[in-house]
Length: 136
Image (tube, rainbow, N blue to C red; front, side, top):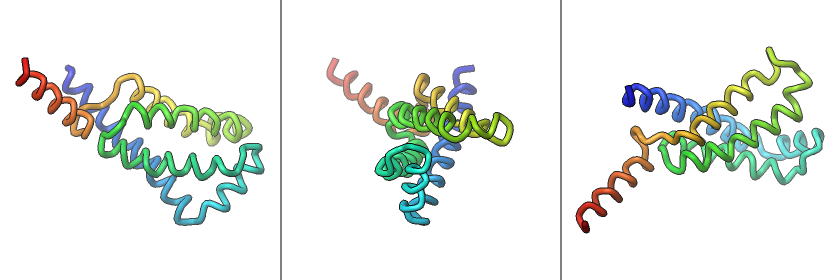
């Protein structure tokens, strides 16, 4: 059963990583000026666009690779919470903030559980445990 859970968590981690990576990439390819202006229009300091989109881009890659999974997932939680509060609620649930809420819950799950299968974090932990066993 634990293996099935890790397989499911792997899918959540990789898909969440792909989604955030592509959103960050799209913002960088389109120029962050438009995103920064949008942030300003909704009451968020424009410089935050650069921070958020960098977290999405780098964090997405990190999740795909399984590097710093809990840390980057934890960073995605407030990003999605702010997205829901500033834009999503006004649109309602269906067609509004349902997608952002799904991403928030996926990120929260990874923050709490981590994801070791096929991950750099898992390989590093395994290597550390192997090294500790050699010295004891």
